[in-house]
Image 1 (cartoon, rainbow, N blue to C red):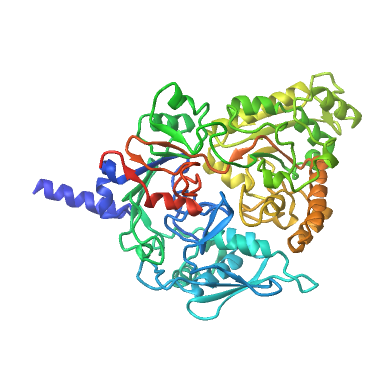
Image 2: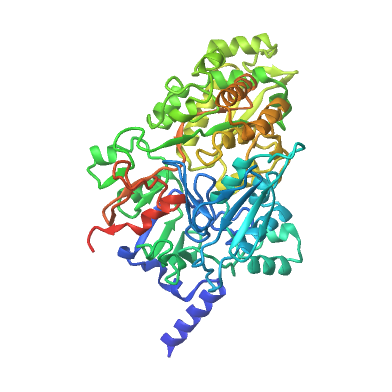
Length: 598
């Protein structure tokens, strides 16, 4: 009887904590049924609300236009950054433009179902966009200026209407393509339930816990606390229909322990406790060349991954001296020793800025060809130019007038901080090098490393003055690139936006840049495009509203094959991107995994 009472008490406690009955055995997940991850989930999950904000729920609610994480919530299409293709997920077949690119038509798969057994419909897509605009979530802020509305023609057919400019042309048809692969679709009926229980209050809706959320993906929540997050496969998943995958993904469980920092995740990877690691690992090649571990990356040779993005130090334009002085901004930027960042912080897993000269483009051949290198070469810098930085500051009258070793701006000592999340060791190493550059030119820069749960709430606040120089990455790839990334660097549409995950985190404004960004999406002439992209690069290198620190893969992808094998590689002919088996078309990997010892 005592054992029975104890068992009943444990069940009641589990239910009171909001856990499922299955969660009692979460600490004993079958190793041959569980795919373990590292480098994605930092801190405790805040919510399961797919239309909310600050969910801190990386395994279920995360991603961008380079590939949304569709384990639990699905997009219309899956983006593949290896070839730029869009493969239908909830969508059936190809999308279709009308003649003047003002409308985009999409059909929903007949087989697509929600977890409650109801059909995924065009109304769900329309309501997902509508609520985003109403409450100002990430979907609303990212696409509200480009999409006028989404109309459900019937249950399975929808039309996405482009927002039009004064000339009657679409503001930016590229953003409609981004929407297809970047926005998870939520169930309209569930959205209405959330709205009703929160009395229509936008803030309350954004912060709703979403414990009753309905999903369409192959996995759902199983367990979450401050030590781990576990998803369990939904064996009723519609995607086993012949119109989609035709089968279920191989792992029954997706699990992510919450590690304190990168070294802890790397240790777990080495020990075979992690199968897929999405975090930077210094000198990753040593894991197989020297340690002889069954660990591999997408490519056998450096840079070992596909470098698509540029982690960037953003200047906070809410701080007057940074807003007013381009000389100060550029001096710090040209003084930074980027070769040291690449050699030490990135262990040469990045091209240098000599190899791929600084611009707004990633280092891929296609993007590098989009601007005139010769026209801007005198503005580009490879870094560690201490003499040039000192001369620039002296010429601007930013000098040390009191002899304490630090320069002043308008009589005020320049004292800035350089900030990134704690535990992101490669980013922290980069911020230390930025701070060291400041010391060499008489500009005090101290480093600050808050926990990510705090960091994410500050840098997304458009009015914050707490962080002066802070790191975040623009998007790496997607249907709208490079326009989409440049829009993130420049667009004033993000200025003043609360909970801003979309772009221009430094709140910089340049009217000419805005003008060019409005023209490019409707321009088809290659030479005109090149001229406009070149001008944008010139503005960026002159004004320096931010400065990229390195080139980097959008996601890292190191795998330990002691338990699971047949992960995608760059030479296997399958064209599955190194997106950690979770993002965009990278999720195709989950359907092809094999056990080493079945």
